[in-house]
Image (cartoon, rainbow, N blue to C red; front, side, top):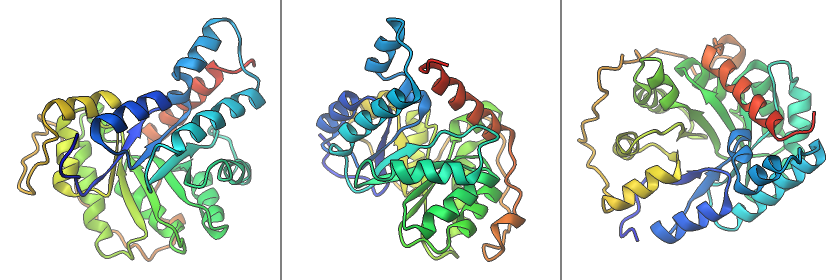
Length: 287
């Protein structure tokens, strides 16, 4: 069990409450959890249902998702559970917000996940006005992060932003340099946006999260188990991250006081991420 907690909050990236409990027993705590359609589709109970030939109706899918989230909710700390709304490329903000508003009632520590698209940010704006906690996901650029900041400026609750570092690495870019850039940009902000590092693929990713003092990191169980096997190492601030030849992402001087509609939020990986989540969501449905 860990003796010294890192400054970075640790969230489990997964959809299986038994895994969350196992990690909590291993580490001694879990600050929060992130879920999405892909993770829920690979929940053992859901997989067993689908394998048996039983596809879920939309109502059954929501019921199962709610049951999983409620089980996880009691296991985690004050960083809550992020619950993703269903959104394809054509889903309008009003539909996302209506679904998010319902899912926000599922548990007392909910964060509603919206994709970093024009409609997703409109839904986030509506949610913040309604006093909801939000997590903007599938973020791949500093400009997207700036737009999230501007769209949620009136939030009285922390707003999570989830840059996917591993998927940027897959494209030959150093995803961790985006985290560094976003943190630098937010130094002049009001503090309402918290950087939640996502798509963590390695111990090195996790160590650099700690060294950069990222606000939060959502981590697959296998990486947390590897961290435990190394004695819960916490690197010093001087930790040198080996980007293994990946291209650095240059810093942009962006004005956080601009309207969010003025930032370029388009990115092919955001689109591909939405398409993947939709495919996994449909995998469990009888449609």
